[in-house]
Image (tube, rainbow, N blue to C red; front, side, top):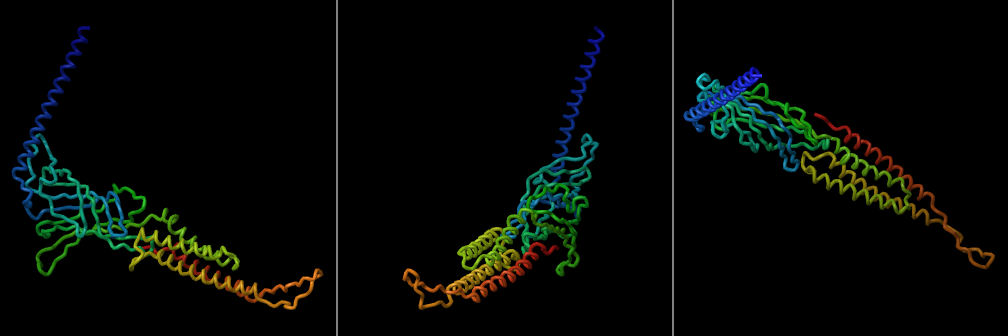
Length: 385
């Protein structure tokens, strides 16, 4: 029993020694890290560029397509901006600081390359950067970019869009900042989050060095990104394409209704109103004017004109049928009935006018069917890039 108690006391003593030793080591490391950061910041001025040329590697990691403003021609995306550059002022001997190989520093407290996107608006979150023992500084900053694009809606809702984004140093040439592409995150979709309305087809990066006549001995380097994405057709197939085709095909039904039926003109009027309503809804989604207007808008406008002509043809057919049913000759003298009453002669219908009205209806039905078959084939088989 005494042996067990002694062993237990020994174990507890060792545990206490280990805890005390760990706390002491943690305190030493904390103090060394504090001293290291203080020393590094004493010799560092964020307004002064490091020893040139600064080797800068850059890459973008796509997070998601946040929004596509079709009216304003703006693509909004969220990305991770991955940058690594050399700064000789962030170098130390890890043996003097408890083997510390990296420290974290606030992003706004260190010099960072003035890399900016051309023509795009940028919003970024304030995070920390990592400084390593060899003088490498690496930042991984979440950003939101608003990129102006020239959208092409000709094949809406099967449209494919391409947007270009360029990053370059605002003030320094390649002699002072040598901009290169980070291989592993040059244009990465690893952490991409799917969008319910848009699908990214490709995301590529290209490095370009340009020399201008004013400065033949200096190269100005930029990294360009090309984003290609398309609309997911699923919901638009149900909400846009199918209702438009069905409403337009109702024009054909007008020619199958008897000319003297009052419902024929009612149907033509309803079809015209339905097409105008769909055109107004389409205008709320995408621009329907300009060189990049969607073919769907042209199709709906064309359908409105066809529905208008169908209404005119219905009036002509109805009048021909009415005249045919009321015209004809009868016995104007009349005969005496058995009761002495005069029998009025009933008019005979003009079959030629009535048949002419039906022939016009059939011809229009065939012509309109061919027109809608061609138009529907164009819509359901869009051009692809």
